[in-house]
Image 1 (cartoon, rainbow, N blue to C red):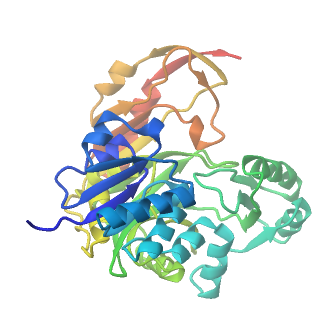
Image 2: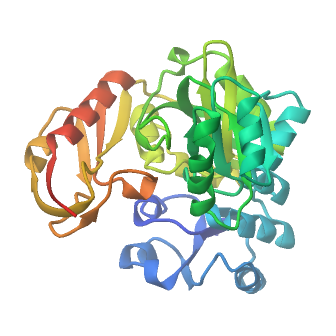
Image 3: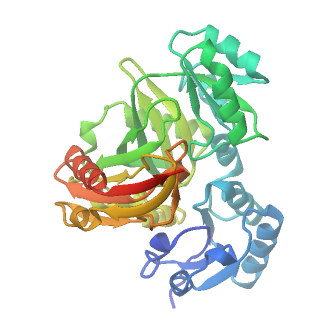
Length: 398
């Protein structure tokens, strides 16, 4: 019988695990007991219920698994266990993203220092010990600054200060979101935000897709939409090379990465690098637009397989609903009409009556989402946004 590689998958969701059947691997799935579902159990060869962010417990389990049925690779889709997966990769000598790359991707200060030292990115930055440090940094520039926790994720604690007078409020927001973290100040660069989805195999980076972002803007830049197309020629031509240079700089040798950038009139700035697939169902719109299954490519990259190239050039997009106010949902209108709109693939997570909702100050406050397709990325984005806007919440304001 042909040997099927044995991969340890740490974290995940039913939507991702449903892709496992039929792939040329055997997967052992490590997940918190409360998140295990009948579907997830049916999609893998073995399930381990564990708090996988506990490095000691997860490493011990991985060691026992490897002794019983040798592991070939490990991959993690949860931001907060990437370091655990990297430690297991090195502990067992199996394929997986290594600790240095994960450390620099999760430590925004370390990433900035590394990109600066190798002349990949020239964004001004300063590690701030206190609010006075941040105020001095803001006074040195003219376009404002961004404050963020050094080890934050998912936009956690990000806040813009347009002037020195705004710094204290931004500082309070950043430190309040992650009280144990240091705070990084960066110059604010005004431009269009993108993310670049890559898969690396044998040290070779493949750009699978470029995704254009829609955000709420200052001060928190909450992502409320993503749109992509299989035709990457429509995006800035220098973007792939800059992102690949950044991945080289932090030492990415294998696996998926989700790199966020800002493209301004005269420069491209790396915002952050994530050594995992992009969240917010970016993997799904990438597949709809390009035909490339990012999860499959991410798994097979661990085995040395170069990812498929895009073979579709339509557009796909996701748009998120936001609450108009803080309060309780009384009723929802227009959802059926939205589902029937042209290009709509699916609508999920519409809040039920009685749900408490909040104006968006972080990504957790986003509500329903719509995924749509169109002839181009812009057409898909308009369809997704039109469908979201047609769903109306009646909110009892608290």
